[in-house]
Image (cartoon, rainbow, N blue to C red):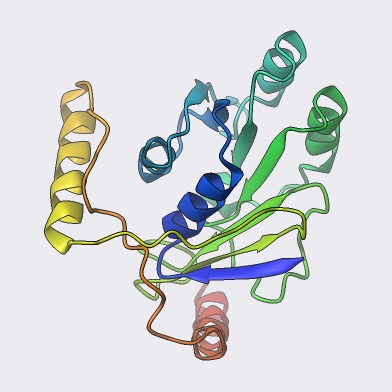
Length: 219
């Protein structure tokens, strides 16, 4: 298992997807944060939205299994979002996905969960487990994202130019499209910050530890 740390969780996701270089679509829950599909598009990946379950607001697992079983090898992977940071056990679901399509790439998106900076609670069937300490997350440091990758998962940092105005414009257009229920054009431009974090992993981890402790006491 290897650890990857970036200024934003979507930068981790972007680098992982670009390193995979897969053109097959990913399955995403329909209630996913808009930045996720936008990041996929920027990385050149397609996606299919799947409805959510009325029982727990997670991606509809039965529908995912049906889609994968009907079109084996059509899908590149799935991003399993932990709605509201719920710590459910998806092991049986992940196992069935791997049985149907062993090559399916599973990203366990735990950005809304308490950050597991030591990787002690990872699901062994997930190829990537993603965490965030950005805006509105369990711990909000205003920056930072990291992931645990299985050793065979390729990863390379892809340096790109970043401008704050491009990010502001992309966010404004995305929010406007959601509010008006209109079509959102894929956001090109220099909106994704892929620069190396300004803090070392050790410094960031200490900040996470302190903030997680305070947040847990408050909750």
